[in-house]
Amino acid sequence: MGRLIQADRRATLTEITTRYNRGMEQSICEATTRTTLRRMGYNSRRPHRVPLISTTNRKKRLQFARAHQNWTVEDWKNVAWSDESRFLLRHSDGRVRIWRKQNENMDLSCLVTTVQAGGGGVMVWGMFSWHTLGPLVPIGHRLNATDYLSIVSDHVHPFMTTMYPSSDGYFQQDNAPCHKAPIISNWFLEHDNEFTVLQWPPQSPDLNPIEHLWDVVERELRALDVHPTNLHQLQDAILSIWANISKECFQHLVESMPHRIKAVLKAKGGQTQY
Image 1 (tube, rainbow, N blue to C red):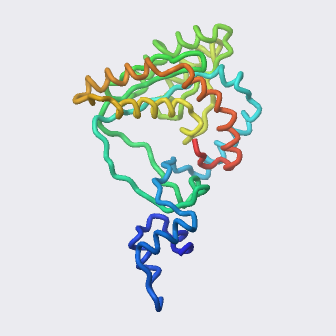
Image 2: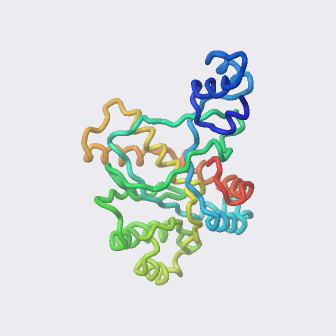
Image 3: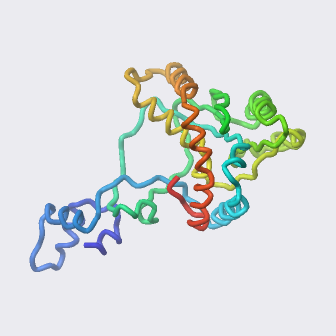
């Protein structure tokens, strides 16, 4: 039965029982299968969703982790984190379930890989540091380089110069195409005496603590007594939730950075639990 689980983590209880009974003189029922699996330490769980990381990007993630393995929490306090996220009015309840033991949550056979995709709803751009939450900017359509330049000049620049007047701040952004456009790169070069752009490894949402703030917003949206019924209400709810995220919450996320770096090193650039 253990070999059946290892061969197909997504098999249902019925499928496992059927496969086990093939060629057996004495068959078992599903109740016996369930009892046996639990006795072996297996439970049906939803798999962690993680980005599919290429071999090249695993190396880049590992290089980043090695370069920053000696950074302390005090060093990470100098970083301002940013990202875009989309929030939907409606959600699919479809879930994949797999069989795993308690300590197998990050086993490759127990993961569901994901890729970035679009969808309906409200898209926002936000930033924060250990010191404070930054602005949250609604984006009316898919972000392009021109729009992002406005965000950088209107929001990133004043945030960085205010929070890091000694020019010792780092601005983090991922590798989205609009972030790497020539007009963006040229703008950052013109202001490199005011702050530094952190060289970020591809496919690394687990290293960006703002991802957990998006989770906070998502959970709070789902917990609302009255759910938004249109995009305007959804946007207002997102902005309100963001403004009320506790300082303890986002500071704790920044303080987790040394542990995240260690996790990437341990995984040799692969997926981590974050």
